[in-house]
Length: 125
Image (cartoon, rainbow, N blue to C red):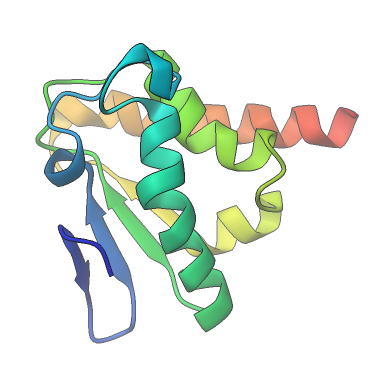
């Protein structure tokens, strides 16, 4: 398990984005540190793979960062499905994205939107 990830008694892994990327930004790794692609490949993909193989969940907490750009969120979360790394149903069953404070709740809504849009795009293809 990575630094900054916590494991609950139920086997649920919790990832606090702020521990990995205090100032997340950019879509691609070439855009600089803490990009959506970097977060997806380095943190999110391995955790989700573990959760699927163990029948558990990954809980991603959005609170505590300097904010989020839409490109970061779409690439990190929508990219899980758009790049065909995971089936939409597996993401839905094994990934829980939350915001504990009101200021971060709009970002939670964006993540949910990007996941839906990626699923629809994949279904249409």
